Image 1 (tube, rainbow over the protein chains, first blue to last red):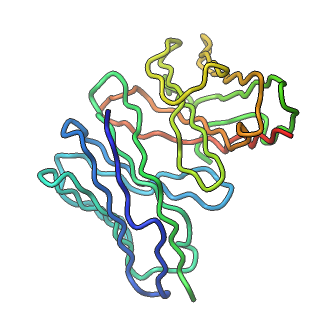
Image 2: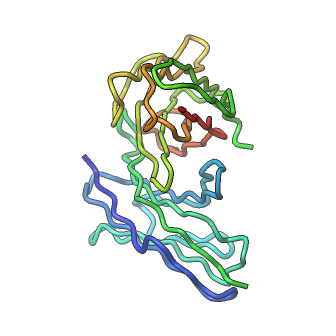
Length: 114
Length: 115
């Protein structure tokens, strides 16, 4: 099955700086890559996703890039704010298959210091 | 609010007991996924249902079982509970598994504490 690796496990940045979280996947058939943000004790919330026919996608301060050849994708957060502090999970799946389950990375604890 | 509902929010029980967690997917979503999240752990996939049928199994223990009913709500049954089963249990739903739009939306979770 698919294996998703996520780095780093913890990340501390100063408010206003950028944060980058990286993930790799193993199955070249994966073609859908979402990112979830989870605050303490809350549900994971989908913040952005990318499909394999696109190399980059932006939504305000958040962007995701995908390199299909190298099988890695990254989350970029610019102008970080204290409310960005949370655990971020990357995931991979095969849209178009009959399963669609998400394979999650182990998460990155992001802390933004004011 | 994702539109996915889960009950109860909290559950406290004793070892050896059995509990049932309930999930209602978003309106129109046919697929339900169950995940377990222990303290400081990631999201462990347990099982997936699509339109009433089991589609995929992950790291689900034999003491655990699930089903999806004709109205598409799902229940996760946990039996012979052990201390290590204490965790947050999330359900997520999507329109069609593996469809062109594969977004999964999570419910608020049920926090299970086994004493």
